[in-house]
Image 1 (cartoon, rainbow, N blue to C red):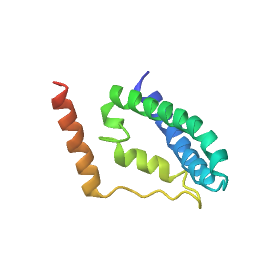
Image 2: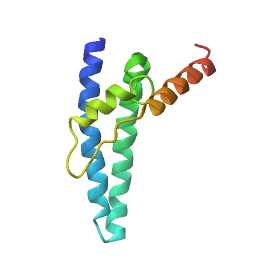
Image 3: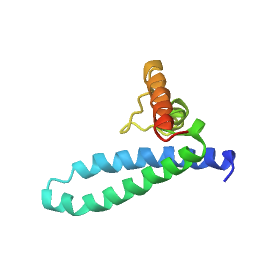
Image 4: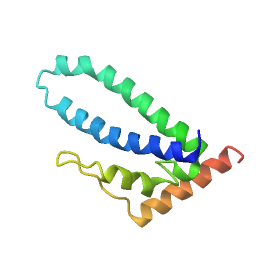
Length: 112
């Protein structure tokens, strides 16, 4: 995968994140706890695969990693898909700096 494809996939994941957030909100509207709990394992599976995809792309292209060096970029992608039900909070400069520093610590831990 080249970096352009990675950017395209992240854009799709940004859109999906809004849909997943809305699904979580809608799931909370189900009054019957037992009925809601039957759907939770499926949501957990979806989230697991979603975050694995984000990490796979981010580890190959660290500058795009949605949780670290690419935090601001990914937040901007999510912002364009914002809905009245799902608002996107843009990260502060402090949060962006913190994410970048955390990435550097993780790289050092892995010996990179």
